[in-house]
Amino acid sequence: MTTPTISRDRIKAIAQREAAAFLSARPRSAELAEQTEQHYLFGVPLHWMADWGTPVPLFVERAQGAHFTDVDGHQYADFCLGDTGAMFGHSPLPVAKKLAEAAFTGYTAMLPTADAAQAGHALTERFGLPFWQLATTATDANRFVVRWARAITKRKKILVFNGCYHGTIDDVFVDLDANNPSAPPATRASLLGQVYDLTQFTDVVEFNDIKAVRAKLASKEFACVLTEPALTNCGMVLPADGFLADLRNACDETDTLLVFDETHTISAGYAGYTGLCDFKPDMVVAGKAIAGGLPCAVYGMSAVIAQRMREAKESAPPGHSGIGTTLSGNMLTMALLATNLTEVATPKAFEHIINQQNKLSTGLRSIIKQHNLPWSVTQLGARSEFQFCPTSPKNGSEAEAAMDAELEQAIHLYLLNRGIMITPFHNMTLVCPDTRDEDIEHFLNVFNECLTELVTN
Ligand SMILES: Cc1ncc(COP(=O)(O)O)c(C=O)c1O
Image 1 (cartoon, rainbow, N blue to C red):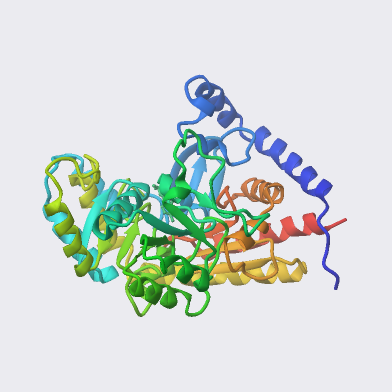
Image 2 (cartoon, helix red, strand yellow):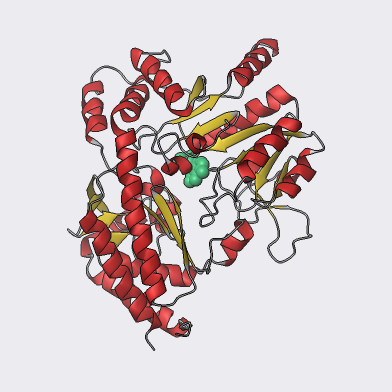
């Protein structure tokens, strides 16, 4: 069987047809879009909400568990789950109940509560790191971690991996040149209003390239390596066997901190990817889903790092540390964090979501194979990514080279019009504790129909 060619004309035709169908079936979304156009820049509260490739934004009526309904009454099985914020389901019941209860007992006092004690215990029990701090978003948590790392090591540079994303923390937006591997790293061209040369203090190498890591860290100029244990924002790149252990050693040998951003890779299991390693990172960041999808992020650290942080704080002059925001760790957040950690994101929930993703990934692989397409499916626990390359990419450059925005858009619209939502930016699918077998079967049937249309000449 020969590999089918998917013609650009066919992709365009499907995308156009699906866009027209989307619009005609969603008059209420179109009507609301006219209203929001008048008040919001780009017509939406956050400009990313206009990045879905739909002719008008999709307005949501309500979301519950693994499903949501739009304002025109269409129902969807949600495999995007707010790009991870809702990975434990929309409005998980214990969190919703706690939210209702806590609504009348105060939101923010800049003081700890009994829930803080419970959440701290739950975080340590889960990730095995003894000390924690709160932030309101994963972006902020990463920003604070980088500040702490620089403060305690008294080094200015950080090392990241090509294709990484850690939120809108400026320091990490440094890229290798895909067309010229020997060119020096450059500040990401798409950044708005960025006036500093980020390459001054941030360096970047390819993921899974331990030689390149060692060559950089040897200078002992780096405060930390900040990375997801598997890259999940440029498609998906899993760590090669032994890479993370080698990275741990390279950091130890050069007194460089190793920071795992587990905001997405918590999909790997109860304690994220950290739980799968036989070593610990120095610091761990988690956000998005950690308090059931409400604004909250955490960062944890080893006892040794905590001690160095205390010393740095104590030896600094009194005044602003540049770390923290007023609403971080507020009373309401701590109540929801404690509830989500102890009652929702349980080992049983992880068993279910990983099992469901196994079924989805296996199904996707088999349909891709049936159509003889040179695509692959890469899975990390409850999360997977289908990518337009025959084997899973080994680094950010390979992952980005496999992207095809036009093809993605055609597939995403096709799925959306048939009640399946996946992430808009690449081809990520995530399952939650409420994802049922019927949702997976429906997804697979629609995916199969879509590929049949794409490859038919
Ligand atoms: C790995 C990772 N870290 C941090 C963030 C930032 O999260 P937030 O936008 O909630 O600050 C993201 C966002 O996608 C992410 O993917």
